[in-house]
Length: 110
Image 1 (tube, helix red, strand yellow):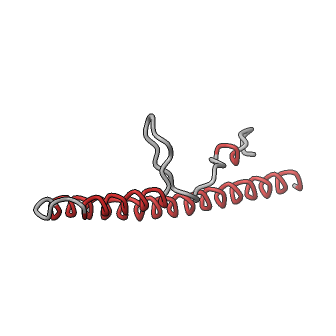
Image 2 (spheres, rainbow, N blue to C red; image 1 turned 45 degrees about the vertical axis):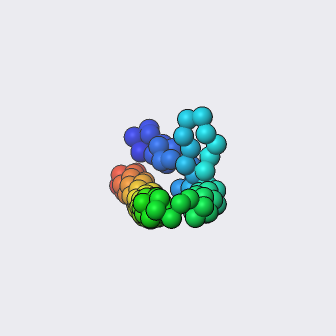
Image 3 (tube, rainbow, N blue to C red; image 1 turned 180 degrees about the vertical axis):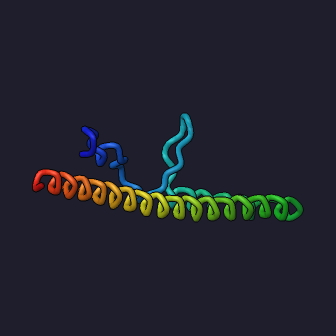
């Protein structure tokens, strides 16, 4: 506690990592497993189309998968950076509280 403010309470306590879910209004949550399963279903449906229509749709599906993988990587990196930031903030709070205690002890001891 510094100047009457309990600093650890201002830090988010929700978990940073875990199952990444995508959710859109009116839809159920989509886990990575669900996405990959639906992607496989899409690939199977593309295989059933006439041969002249397959390349264009397959290219779009591959671009979608690449975007998904890029987004997942970016989210993982952002979560790691957020975890590091939280740790740094906790250390700074600890250091500030320790400095305050030391200062109070010096003032009280003199």
